[in-house]
Image 1 (cartoon, rainbow, N blue to C red):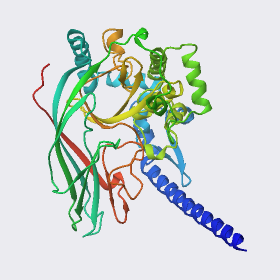
Image 2: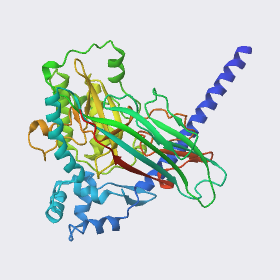
Image 3: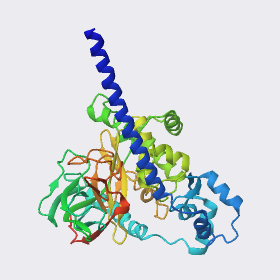
Length: 447
C-alpha cells in the first residue's frame, strides 16, 4: 500500500508539472500570435497601392504568383489575409523582375553604408599588408544610448526593469570599454561570462511621464583582415571542448535537420578543407538569398529553415544559416551581434565567427556578403575573414540568459540589441517603447 501511495504521488506530481508546462507553452503561443499580428499589419489594398508606384497595371495573377513564391509575404490571420509590414518594399528587393523595374525608375545608387564600405575596404587591406597585423585602423567611439518607455504603459509607482545593450569587454576587435555615466545612480553590468552584455537599471513609473533609461559609454574597435590560405588551415583536434561546443546543435535555430545535412553535403561535395567549405557556403548564400527586412525573430520557430523556405533573409537570418551549415560540416562557428556603427548608417546588425585551426577565430559577415561594387576579388570577398571597424559587439551567442534574470519572456528571444523592459505585470514589447543612439566618432587612434 505504501508503494502504491508513493507511485500515485509521483504520477500526480508529474501530471502537475506537465500541466504547468502546457500552460506555459499555451501562453507563449498566444503571445507569439499577438507579435505576429503586429508584424503582419498591412492590408491587401495598402500593399497593392505601394506596388502600383512601380507597376501601375499590376494584376491579381502577379500578386498570387509573388505570394506563391514567398516574394510577397502574407498569412491568414483571424480569417483575413494580412501582409508583413514590409512585404511590399521587400518584393522589390527579392524578386529579380520587380527589382529591375524599381532600379529603372529610382536608379541603383549605393547606400550610405556601401559608400563607407567602398572607401574602407581597400584601406583596411592595405593597412593589414603594410603592418603585417590582422587588426588595424582602430577607432574610439562614444555612444549615448536612450530607451524611452511610453507614458502610462506601467502604472504609477510600479518598478520598471530595463536591460540596455553594453559593449562586450575583452574581445579581439573591441577593447577599453568605459562607462561614462547613466541617468540612474544604481546599475548592474552583466558579468563577463554572460554572452549577452547588458547594463541593468530600475526606475519608478510616474503618471503621464515617459520612463527614460540612458547610458553613455566609450570603446575602441578595430578593423580585422586575415589573409587566408587553405594550406595554412590545420586539421582540427576534435577532442577539445572548443570543437565539441561550437560544432554542436543549439536549441531552436542551429538544428541539423535532414534538409540542412543534405544541403551542406551537396555544397561541400568532396572538399575536405574547412576554409574552402566555408567559402562555398558563404558564396552560395550570398548569391541566392537577397537581404530583406525581417519579421521579429521571436515569431519564427527555426530561422535557417525559414530562410530556405522564403528565399530571403536579413543579417541574423542568413548568418544563422551559414553557421548551421558550418557546424554540421565540422567547422566551429558562433553567432556574434550588436550594431553596425558606420557613419551616417548605424543599425542593428548580426554576423558570426568561424574557427580555423592554425589561424584562430575569424569574422564572417554573411549578409554583407560578396561586395560586387568593389574593385577586385580580394576586396569583393573581404567579409569572409574581414570586418570593418564600425562594429559594436554586444553578444557572443544567441538566446542566452540575461543578468539579472528576466522574469517574463523577452521581446527578442534570439538576439539582444535594442534592450528589454518589464514590470511586475509582464513584459513590455517593442510597441511600448522606443530607443535611440547618438554616436560620436572621436579622434582616430593611429597605429
